[in-house]
Image (cartoon, rainbow, N blue to C red; front, side):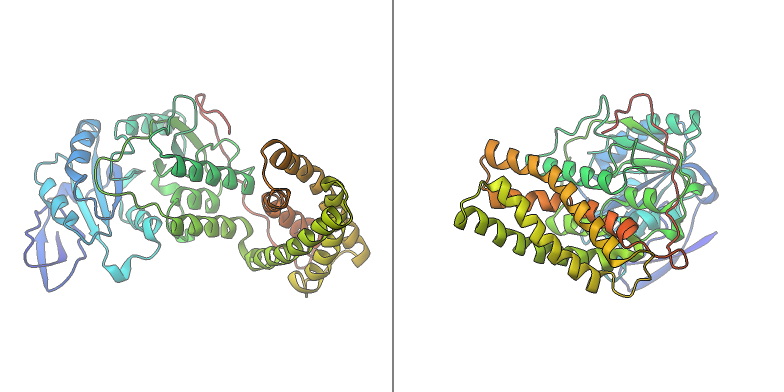
Amino acid sequence: MATALEHSDDIDYPYRVDSIVSMPPLAVQTEFPTESLETRYLSVIIPTRNEAGNIDALLQRLAPVIVDLEAEVLFVDDSDDSTPRVIADASTWFHSPVRLIHRNPGNRSGGLGGAVLEGIRQARGTYVVVMDGDLQHPPETIIDLLNQATTRSLDLVVASRYCENGDATAFNRVRATVSHASTVAAKLLFPGRLRYVNDPMSGYFLARRSAIQTESLRPNGFKILLEIIGRTPDLRIGSVPFVFGERFAEASKASLSEGIRLMRVLCALRFGPSISKFWRFGLVGVSGLVVNLLLLAFFTETVGLFYLVSLVLATQGSTLWNFLLTETWVFKGRKQGSSKLSRATLFFLMNNLALLARGPMVFVMASLLGLNYLLANVASMAVILVLRFTIADSLIWKSSPRTSRASAPVISVISSDEEIAA
């Protein structure tokens, strides 16, 4: 079988590397051995971006792990360095078929998640393993992932840093904080779906390829696992522990922009068609926060009340403000099944119940941790924003039966014996 390859004329790609899409000018026809085109038992998908210094070390550790398996290694590369050349050279000595998809700079949609999705689409294995190319994901864990999937008939097995015997101490303090915060945010947004998945931010997992509905996925940067879980119904999911390793070479691709992108993905997955309403609800919340802060400062500094008493009074004023804007802007035009008085009553009840939770949070942050009481109040309001919108959207301003949205699919999740729910 012949496959067209496009590549630059100064790189001599060995025959094992196929599906290369690189810079012009040449396009050549290359013959491939029949075995490399057959369906495999396992496809190891490795998205890479400027990982030239990691490829050989990774394949050397991967070789003994998959030597007895009908496996292929599929690199999906977004590099601008010599990574494609290094992969091509390594394919001459690696015992299993090595394939490469190199995406041009103008065709790298979805970032890392888009690369993984392309790999899943092009994979030939019954099972696919997704892992990083920098040895922070130890190849030896693949056997544990595969054993869990086959012995328990699972569709998806997550390599978890946060279950028993897992470890992520290789993270620096900032990255560890971001990782834990992202995990907590995801579990708050999807308490049912992620009940037994304590590492939804993991980039290391195995899946039965036929269980992934690739046409429904909308990857946007990091964390394709959460995208798969959020958009694929009826998955049977388990976990195995792994120890997050040190990066072998090159630089980490994590950044603040990827963190912001992740939060956008989380909100899009959670709220779907209501995402625009969520952002408007958030803007109303910001305006209400200004009202709340002004009232809180007034009652505390001018009137001389204890700040927790001032917090109660300030909440009533900002709640009225928020209700009026939410009623006339956020959910304007939605067919309602309840009266305005009923909605106002429930809205005030929700905010005052939230105050019962915020009060202890503010007290701990202000009186015990020494944070300024105004900043403590801001932090407490941010924590409950998502919960408040969920209640407002699904209960207070719930659509009438004729216009109600279909409920999200329920995902069947199975926890492994080793996993500890976060």
